[in-house]
Structures are given as structure tokens and as C-alpha cells.
Image (cartoon, helix red, strand yellow):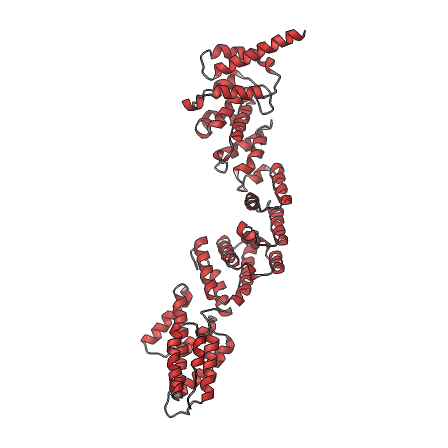
Length: 491
């Protein structure tokens, strides 16, 4: 009796499988049931084999299976049973499907002998139904067995090149191959294993494995935000706070989280920044992206203003954000405080070019103030580093600081002016420098100029022809004479 299997063709996912299956359809329509059954089996085996070959191109473990298959073929050893076992192991087929296919395999082994019992129409239909609906109708998707092996391989230190680019590429390829229904399970399982590594401070590969896991999970979530519900995200965060803080605190993921999850992430970073200073940098990134709550933004600014500086300097904060604290420290009369600021200015963490023009000027004024107060580090910095390291606005601030201190008071020292104005500057920088300094002097409301009258007169004698100092001194002398006249008039 003929068997019509043509209605299955439209369900088959891959064209290559349709071509082979169509031969089974032809055999069934011609009542060649033994041949039909064997073609069904051949279609199944070839489809599974092709799936191994395809995935093996980017998965070394599955690539080993492909190598073993080719080895068996070269030695003319039947590989059907091996293909079934490995398909189950890697999740190509479920346990239940494997049981059915084993039955078909045993029947196939009987049917290849011409003297055996004939196959029935019902057996053909049953086999076609399982083979198509459980295998051929589905794209290559891996399930729990593969997930188990993937997590185990990810926990091997040398499994993959440990760069974010490589790990992200792996995560994307996994998402194309894996059954999406097991994704939440996979992420939770990997998080559980990563948490064990995080807790084990003796593991010398700890940082490598944690970074790999963070990149992998971040990529998985980024491409499927709806992987977990709002409540599930929050529950996972409470279970794995450190790892998920790193995963979710990047702006493009952070904005996708609920307000409750965002609050928990930021609050955890604030609470733990003493242990993990770089957490403040992560908070700043959210602040700069304008996605930090107003409450947390204020907390960040207050924290930078009040925390011990030795903690802040290791946080990776931007120069723009930490500059107000550094400038304030340079106003301190405490050498310990001001020296920390000077050391930080000299470090690679402090980007002078990132300061705005006014901050550069204020930096120069404060360095001059420390120089005037005989701060040894400030003196050395001005003598040996300022000329090559400070931008022009900061040099101008240094020179301005020889006349007006950070507290808007006159401060005129012959010795300080001698050193600071010996700094070599380009002719372009000299243009208008005196006028600019005079403008700043006039804009101040300092009233103690008369205290430095003798210093001003000495400078007038010392620098009769200096193109920068002379105009400033002349202006100060004029202010003194005006003040004397006005004082005499009041009497």
C-alpha cells in the first residue's frame, strides 16, 4: 500500500533535508515501504551529521565529533549509533526523541536484511512524524546537554582568547545555535559558577574567568533584555550582586533595567566603593550619560568632596569631576593635603588638557600659592615640570598667582615672581599676557595692596624693561597712588 508523506515537506526547515526526504516521499508513493523507511533514516542521519559539521566550524568541542565521524567513515565503520548518542549529548535531540530514534535505529538494522519482516504503513507514518517534527522541522538549536558543556568549557582558563571581542563573538554565535527556552537556565547556571569563582580568592585565574563571564552574560542579556522579568532581574541581583553590578552598570543595559534594579545597582556600588574603588568610576559613567538619578548624582558629588583623597585617586574618576576637589586641596595650608594634590596632578590619571580654561588658570594660581608658602613639592614642580607640562592658561594662572592668591587677596613676593616669570613661554603667549593679568587684578576686590608697597617698588627697580612684569608693576603703582590720594582726600 502506498504511503503519502508529501505533507511533511513544508515543515522541513533546511532545503538539503527536503531533497533527501523527497526521495522517501517517492518511495512511499510507490509502495516501496522498506526503501521509504531506509530513506527516512538516511535523511535523519545526514541532517544530524550536517548539524555537527556546521556548528563544528566555530566550536572546537563539536569539531572533535566531526573529526571522529570522518574517521569512522574512512574506516567504513557505521556511525549511525554514534551520531544518535552525540546528538543527545549535545542537545540536538531530547531524551524522549532519542528513545524513539533508537527504536527506529533497531528497526532499520532489521529492515536492511531482505528476509526480515516487512515494514508497515503505520511504522512509516510514525517514523516520519517523529523524524520531521522533532528534528527536521527545527533549525539547529542546542539544549541542556550542550549548555552544561558550554559552561564547563567557559570555566576552563584557556578555552578562548580572553578578550571582550572574542567572548562577545562566542556569545553571539551561541545565541544563534541554542534553544532560546533554555537561555534563562544557562545564564543562571553560569552566574552560579562565576559566583563560586568570585568567592574563591585563592584562584589565580579568578580575574580572567570573571571578566570572561561578565562579557559573556552581558552579551546574552543585551541581545535579549526580556530574558528575565523585572522581579527576576532584581532577585538575581540580590543573589549575585557583584557580578551583576559589573554586567548591568554599563549605560546601554542600565537604562533597560527597572527603577528598582537601577537603584539597587548604584546603591551597592556606593556601599562597596571602599572595597572596590573603581565602582565610583562606574557611577560617574552613568552620571556623565545623564541617566543617574538626582539623588545619586548629588551623593556622588558630595562623596568626591568629602572622601579621603587616597581612595578617590584610585577610582579612575575623570579629571573634570575630580578637579574641584584637587583645586580645593591646593588651597590648604596643610602640606600633607596639598602634596597629595600635587602628586595627583603629576600622575597620568590627571589630564591637564581636560580642564576648562578657568580651571587651568585656577590651578596655576593655587600652585603659585603653594610655592609662596614654601611647599617643597610645589617649588620643585614649578622649577622642573611647569614649563613642559602646564598648558598656557595654567602658566598664566601661575603668573597671576604671583599677585592675587586663591582667597582673592594680594600676595606679591619678589622671590616668587623671579622664579615663576623665568618660565619660558612663546611669543604668542606673551601677547596680551600683561593686560589679561591686569584685568584679573582689577576684577578682584582685594584691599591689602598697600601692605606690599615696598615689594612693588623693589620689583619696579628690578624689572625696568621686562615686557610682562613692567606693565603690571606700573599698574599696581598707579593703584597705590590713587589709593593714597583718595585716603588723603578722606582726611
